[in-house]
Image: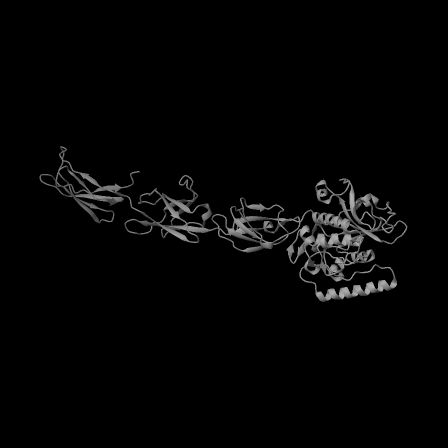
Length: 530
């Protein structure tokens, strides 16, 4: 790789300019690749703040890694950010200038996606890749003046706060251009990290750490090399051993993109009945994602929220087991997990299931004639405690049938049926019948009822109470049809076979001598005893 030459004279400046043009032309020929990336000035200018994905964790870990490497390498001019590919941090050999330190921290912190795959900050730092294959924010310069121009050219990503900024108000991500006290120009730059917690300092290892101190990163050509400096040094500190590194604020650029707390995110979802909107439990989902990730989870309530435990990226959510009594929704749903966020897409718009339903049809018939019976009343239930807990009561229509409403299999796959009442002259059948529901079907249950019947018993006696044998009788129904002819036995009794309920006429038709015939018809009503 050709080493760029520091700007020290007109001829050398011209050579550097020509080399920069050649580099830009070379980059244009390479192409931009896929996804969001910010290599050239034109690519940076097209970005929105929402395109930048970065977290506090990444920025601090990137800062710590580059401070450590900068201390090892010392001051120099890295070629990485002016090339086309990122060289793993451990492979850097050229050292850092102040701009290198800032631009490397920003790039590796924002390069969370490489070749469309999430990379933790440690993975990004260790992975060789083309800049065009990542979503990192690249500032392709090592000159403070050029960095200033590039920052000014992207107002959608960085806001210029000018130079009248109180150092105590500086915050994580701010890029501060500084210079010496008596010169208005900026010849140095630093990166602000602000206050750090004790837990964060466990990996940052700031010397003489103080949780109440706000820090920035500095690269010096003096023996201090890469270091953490207190923000109290802004506008007051002059490094006599490194005279071009004054800390007087000349310009502050503040990132407009959101710096999340952490990389990992999660999701929430809700499961409801497609018709009623009632919450559903028991669904099992399969979540698949980057790098072969696969996980099953069960909804023990109608709402589910994961922790922030998933790498950012594109995932697929698929139901593999529906709630009990519901049809499977096997739709594969896309799910994007972002930095430090809980994706609420499928909680705001719940995933719905259609109930697995069936119906029961009762057909009521006369046990003898097979004719249908109107007006029979039935109780239905899907509860095993039936009949004490009936939930439906339906009456047969003119065709002798009645069909239940849709019954959800999830509420019970067995339907219990008991006859509550029947019209006269039928006998009530109070036994409980069980019917197995079937998905999407109407299951028919035929129920027959016998008509209530009675018998007419005749006793024939003389005036002296003597039982008379051989007396004959004719029994006719209400329409005048003879339904029985009877003869008394030695006990003076005669009994009909079973007859339908109703009104009958009994007439004596013959008597033995010496008795006189009594032909007066007598009316008998057969009716329910109870």
